[in-house]
Image (cartoon, rainbow, N blue to C red; front, top):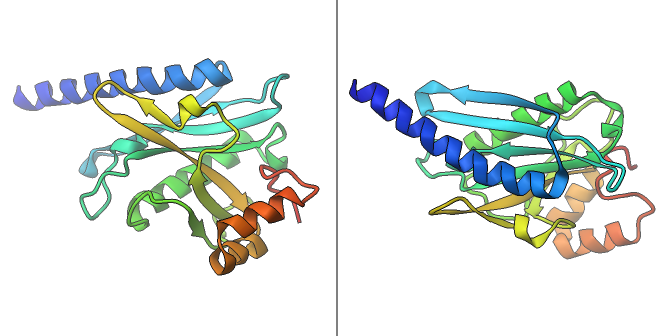
Length: 201
């Protein structure tokens, strides 16, 4: 009976957190088209990934987490952030399922291997990325190009940061690691390609 009560309380807490986060996302991006759920019972990890398709107004597709912030790393520290991946409307030439698999792999890597959610954080080129993309490395950074209200979302008693996952090329990863995030920003400003285009050379 005690176990069932605890499970119900955890579900209730998740429902409330989802309401806050999804409400903030939908207020900016409209209705999500799909959701997948990742769970690991032994660590009490339950993460949802929502897909918000591009609209005629923005032309940007988004994959974003709910409840990643409550996941616990092997160190016992909470992730304390949600993640969002923005892509062009064609998803860089791959399917929603392929991107969902990639995002799920990134989430697992972030929980298990990243010591914290400090930014900027660079992940070198990886076979986890869709094979069709040139940008197979990853940058996790502060949210950019979105409404400021999404940077820190209130979920009742807590405030959750929303961080941006940006596919980057091997050259861009080396640039950030060698010269810093400001040099990357200059590089992107001078590029003919969008920062969210994973096919950029």
